[in-house]
Image 1 (tube, rainbow, N blue to C red):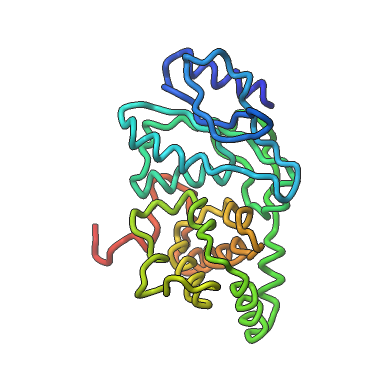
Image 2: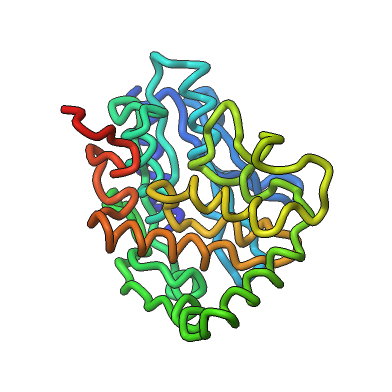
Length: 266
């Protein structure tokens, strides 16, 4: 699969279609984001960040792409995407954070093990270059929580939120958190200096802001140092938006979130 991706990226760079390719590179035993350019000597360091199990880090390349686009607005860049990353791109186009004319996605499919761990409904991008289109997975974790009675469900989330150390990792890693001012730092909403933070104000404030924006990438789960199942919470928020408005984030690059449309606006 890596060879197919390398060939595609090399063709894009050689043709001048992109000024650089934002992918992953292994150096010194570590994998991290890297911008490959035509000036580099080949793509030997390019890796796909193969997932081997829980705790194996992934990266929010879309967030890096936003910074690149702001620094070089006239340039076109390629970017490595999985299914969730592509949903993120489509949503970022809608929110005017990126221009689709300036982005060339190079897609890879997620292995079945990762799709199952994420309970992902579409573990591959439309711009698929390498890998197989796997089947979506059922939302078993959410079903287990929803099966609890109201009091038990409330207690479950209270207990989970009480472990929070207010590191802001969930916000900082999220590719859809691009606001210049964050409500989680507003003293009128969340008291500063309290650890754990106001329960459940901190996490419910963020959950509200994820409504119509969460792309179900699961990075918030992966970076949480105390293991709060934030993805499960946001999956429920996404289901509510779908039930009420028939909208799923990142399904179309020209469809605004219903929460981003003013009543009466044309």
